[in-house]
Image (cartoon, rainbow, N blue to C red):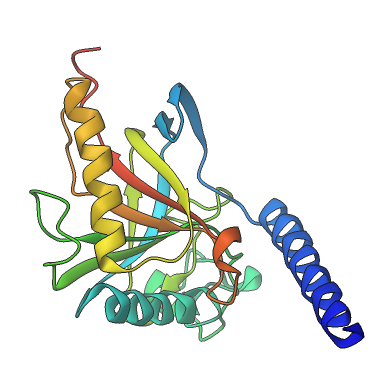
Length: 228
């Protein structure tokens, strides 16, 4: 009986510790800037500010593609990049091309990590085999100042401000569950006569070792706001 009680106490301690770590980590990690213009839990309409993203296109099922894409972009933000040293900016007598050095920089981690099926109809997650995996870059950078990837598969892109619909939920993410959540969001948009402009994206905010009930997930769909 005492052993069961100790096990129970340890389990509660683990949960509370994980919740505290998640909370403090989430507060420290930058997220894309947006304004909520409409809310009806678990749905939201958001206006996102312009941002820079690092992205890759990868093949496979959702789980395989997510892992491969994460590793490629993580490699970029943890040092597989080129930057200019402060004392080697272009001069009047030195060609710009010769100023590129082998120095690298670590880029601050951001959330969420998004994965988007490369189809344009339906929820698509169960049938897609090509995916866009994407990280938002910290707001301190511009396309001119951000370190450049050394891996040609990682691309940097400036994304203008856009309007998205979001569905928030917790737990694990299998293809069937994600497809169901995506369809719920598409149905909500249809009921409101809002037109989707992109396939649904899965946005994940937590590391894979997070407890399922602490995992923050969202389905995001860009929407047409021209009729508003």
